[in-house]
Image (cartoon, rainbow, N blue to C red; front, side):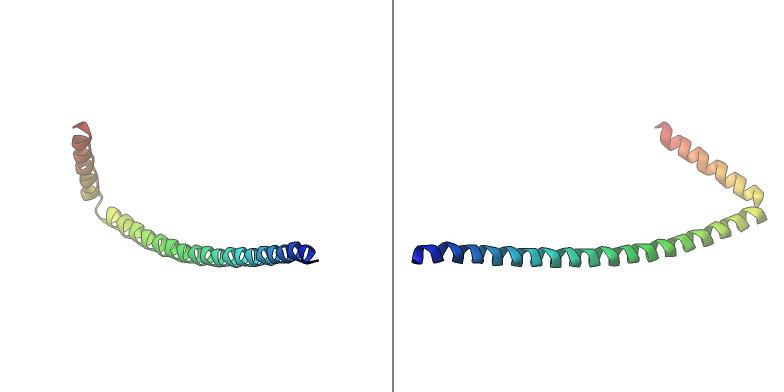
Length: 89
């Protein structure tokens, strides 16, 4: 009679272990989803900040070029010349 109770005890223990493993996996999945959501929010705000900064710099450069077109063209030629020399080597 003890032979029949032993397999059922092991079966119950196995089912309990499976349930614990499923619960742990669900908790890990939920935690990973939360971390991913937080990273997505941070990345979005970070990207928004850099987009605003880039837009501001673009406006400043555009205003400078409009006020100083000759200097801007000469500077662009100089940068192009230097890049050409560097790439030639």
